Length: 461
Image (cartoon, rainbow, N blue to C red; front, side):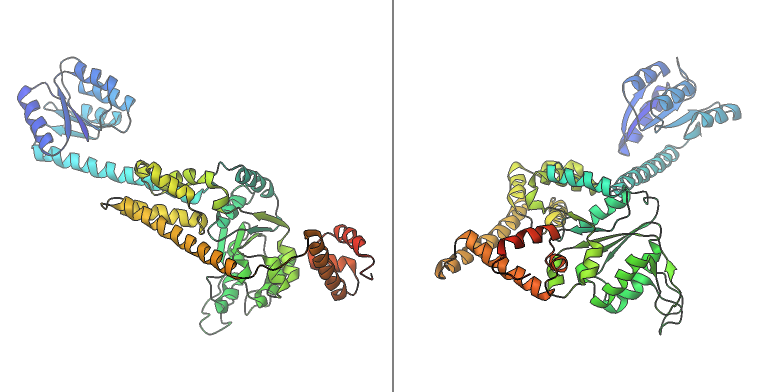
């Protein structure tokens, strides 16, 4: 810590300077109040130790100037002429302590150590608050045109209460998008509850979502509010909705339609006011076709779809994300560790785990950055990933070259054949009802009718 010592008695000044330097403080000393004021005009000090009576400006004037320049400066006044009036005035002006001469140097050192401890706690508190803000008020970090458009879409969509379906690969930031939808919505002052449907055992999922009444089963010693009740007035985010069991899909559909829940063991419906946001890592329509996901629920969820591009499609965001992660973990000064070679490797890599994988990588880099040879270990980690990909690609190439390439018809013929096949299937399934066939195929009715016009000779409808 930087200390300014102002003392007109030469022996005391030299003695205190040497004592403070021995304790590890950076000390500048002067003998007059005017000298001290001049120093304060060009530099801030963590601590000022000043005599009350000095040639030129007084200790109180130094205190006043120091506090005006930097309110965080701690000022200790020393005097052999203590009065209650000056002590009160010093405290009112913001003095940290008031020492009566003669005093033991040990007493001054104890006071300075208290200041050091306090400043350390304050500094840590500030850093923790900054990091907490980064965690709580997480914004989408991007300069990518596609993502910037997505951010604008989020701000518009957030203003209404329609159900939103977020699609994206694992680690691409689906929860972050959900949090932004909540943040920009009128519900921002209420709870945002995030639930991962794949992480809760199926046997507990219903009770966690909808709650249970006291005595409804063994161990139900008190009434339990589910996630939907806790999110009342705010937003609930159901991640990995594709993993929701079929039995619970029917109950979720009822909640969305009726805006009410019934706790396990209860009979009275409870009205809720919740914005529902869901996310999937797989193609829900494909699950519908495989009868693993309810079609009626799919259409109820898919009111406003938002698709997040994977990181490999927006590599221009990688440098921004890296800087953000270094700041998030409070080590922004370590950004210089990223040599051009490492940065290029990070840009070249495809990040199958998306932003989550990149963040884990940066955490690991920060953790091992003090170990000799860390650069080689980091680069070898990326090389091994590349080697795996190259090996897979090489095996695929060899396999493809060994297999006989099938003979396909011309593109238009192939498409016509497949369209005829799928349209015939849909019409048979719906007994010729074009509206139901269009719904089954996930096509607008007008589009299907237009396409069917090309197959009048082959199809009867």
